[in-house]
Length: 131
Image (cartoon, rainbow, N blue to C red; front, top):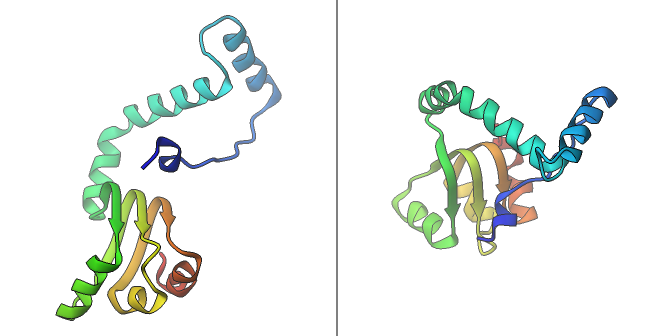
């Protein structure tokens, strides 16, 4: 998966004085650009709270990173009469060959902290099961 596919664009409103301070640091060469500053600040905050993230993810039984399920994975679940809960901190994807019917038959819950990518019809069918 391309690196761009593993990121999500967000919008942040920031005060003008704070923005000016960021621009000053960029102008002085501390950061390549505003995005570099913001990513650096986010990483520092996440690093400072890493233990809390790990504890919460374990308590909530979240998969850390990425989870990809395709038609074959879900068909195997259906054949055994099993279902799955998608619980991810990161990126969860369902392949383009997954049908809404197959998803409904095999996925009981979707909880994703990050991004959930699936065909539009599958996302629509699972909407009531998304936490």
